[in-house]
Length: 139
Image 1 (cartoon, one colour):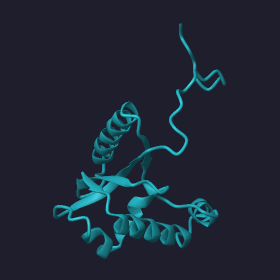
Image 2 (tube, rainbow, N blue to C red):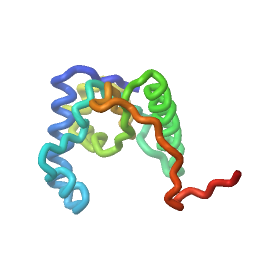
Image 3 (cartoon, rainbow, N blue to C red):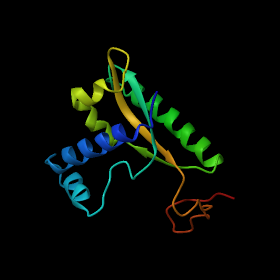
């Protein structure tokens, strides 16, 4: 795990991610990145990066492990009254060797997912039960 709180590094990750999205050749990413005011890190003051040796493995176990860790961080952040967001897109910025080198990762580790953490602008709301028909409730 790598915790990034340095404002300049967060700005660089945001900038590189946005540029890569704009030139990705992926319609969804290009449209998202072209949205006025869009920032891949959403202005969060902290990014926790979860990495694995060798990146994602053929069976997806590394991705599953870092994603489970991220989910636990998100639950803990919520309990502490913090806003959080699971992100994968900004991990593309670490294809840039200079930027990846600034993380100080152990040899062979590859960033897979991130968790943004900060105080929510509008506070946290309790989620109400979803009655839309997308969830089956067995009572």
